[in-house]
Image (tube, rainbow, N blue to C red; front, side, top):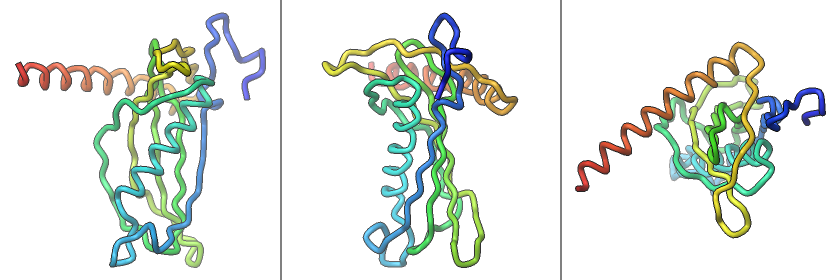
Length: 170
């Protein structure tokens, strides 16, 4: 967790404080008749992993506002481990972009493969459901700085797409 030396006057927190990791074992109830992980189950786990990072950063309740495009790159089978790593890429006034990267690990063969990546937007709220301010993010490593910059581009794309959809409706 952040110590007083890594905080600035705005209450900004380093990305490392939001890093979360969770591991799931794929059980038969998580799979389709071909013993492959259901996409919806993986999306659920991605949402949970993302929420953990958003909670750690904002230290308040968060709700999922959106999830960007997802691809499922390799199959995940019953008995495999699914490892999900998440962190806050960038924080805005009341929202945060969180990146989640997913790997499958076969514990028998010790092989690991990238399964999917996703960007989710979470909004910080209070107990009454009102949006509340979140502290800025401090990217420290080169990778964190790249993700921080990329998050601004993705946000602009999301805003443009929302405006386009709204025009179509009117």
